Length: 237
Image (cartoon, rainbow, N blue to C red):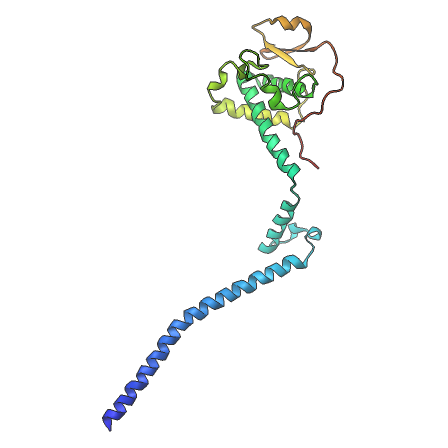
């Protein structure tokens, strides 16, 4: 009789242990499934919120919830067009080319001297007689030895990459010039040379002024029907 009871008790304990083990295995699985369900519900709610309100009518500056901040970011991005991307690319290229012109042509100049060199580049862009982009002006005929408009572009100066404080300062001056808020220091000049030389073409142009170590000139004739200027001063509207 005792043995039968012992067998029943052992069977009972075994059944209990099996049940406990089953629960131990099931609880993590249930917990993981519940977590997945909560995540699903959360995302479903978020999606419903995005669809439910007119984002264009919401002042996001008054909200601090993460979801609404995300919605604000989406609204901002939706305003970006291909024109904006192209403008940004052009802006970056023009800044680079103008920075290089300032660095190689006038890195030892004063602030005014560097801005004056930048003015000549921009004045050529406005002229119908030169390329209508900053990079086009700066590197005109650079592929031809001794035929480039800016000597550094074809005389080997660029074999040494711009570095250090002078390069950083040149980039800053180019940025300042490109804002369009700095007055032209050269009276619309399209040519210049250093004070140490007297090129043959100088007599055919009108002297304007001397700024730093450069002398500036413009043609005696006046521009007619200038071509469309491609200086990226402001993004497209």
